[in-house]
Length: 348
Image 1 (cartoon, rainbow, N blue to C red):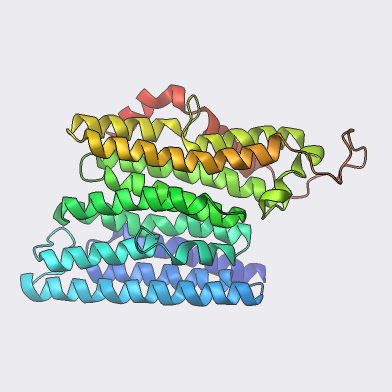
Image 2 (cartoon, helix red, strand yellow):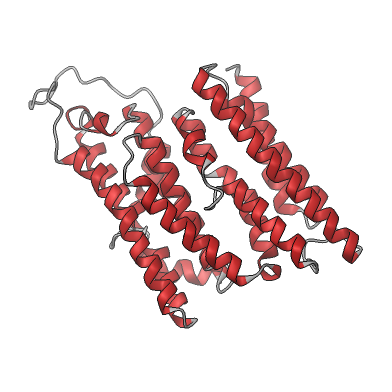
């Protein structure tokens, strides 16, 4: 892609998200979401592959439907209350409709079916943008309107997402689909604690972005898209293999890695709020996700591809892509647990 066009598209992505962040008016927020969608569509379709075009079409239709629902709900609320302000969602029907539309935008269950299919059709870097940056604007709107939304709806969406994300990833062999289900499960964790402690949602979002970035950038540097390709990373890059296994366990939420922090804090908050059954279901759903991360770790570190030698390969090619983003995101994805109190203090 032409670098000038790429710069314009990435700037528009940033502009759309910033516009939504800064808005307290439904029309402005809707406009930011639309700019965001239109900026990523050319990035998704840039390879002109039939799968990429199909994924782009699906994504565009889903996002357009959700944007139309947001506009309709905002108009309904303005019609009944007389103002477009986000903080004044006096109409319960409009608030529920907006929550469902935003859930469709970020891929919360049961509106998650488009997410694995779309992610599977994209290359890894565009998939990374879709899994991280594209979640920010809708989540900002969800956080702003959370107090007007029925708590039962938020709890149901959160529980269904963690369960769907866990169950869906079990049978997959495609890495992008596994990361899509991982994303759905993480979104569930963020949504379920939103009504009790919004700062924990932000902490969970931050850790999710770094862990997912590390996973995507690793797969990009290894050019791996299927589980059986993971077995070939070890002879080429032993260090990367070791850190990737830890990043995957961090995504699964194992201590003493960063991924344990948001799960621990969220379960603690749920117990404080007198919801032990919900917390237990969430913890069990996390075990489902952990199983498919362990599958990836097993394929990567405990199996060796039959067509490679066990000896060190003297012709090992040097990496041409920048390793700094991967190094940074991997370090953060592995080592933030000891500074949990400092992060909590900054977030509150």
